[in-house]
Image (cartoon, rainbow, N blue to C red):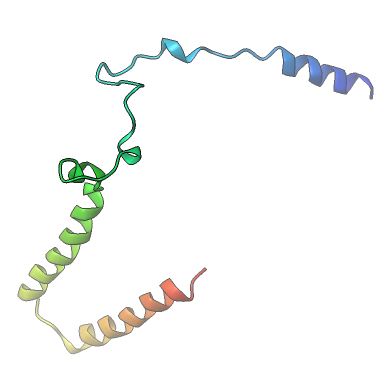
Amino acid sequence: MAERPQAAAKQSTTTSTTPTTDLPRNPKYDPTKPHITEQPMTAANWYKHINWLNVTLIIGVPLYGMIMAYWTPLYWKTAVWAFMYYFMTGLGITAGE
């Protein structure tokens, strides 16, 4: 039993670390320049602080739904399902864990 802790200690001291300086870097990368989240939002850089993927999805998905709803006929069963589904999703957001 006394051999196991010594073997574990020897293994932990002999681990090697690989240098990260060998990795290729983007030539535009400047480690001295602060990240955009550390800079204040101004009129000149406001667009850099926006997550454009989220903006596109939050605007695009409902817009696509409204456009397609114009050309899709609404049936009684579909309207009932949409009404029930609306409340089920609300419960999933508020009552879900």
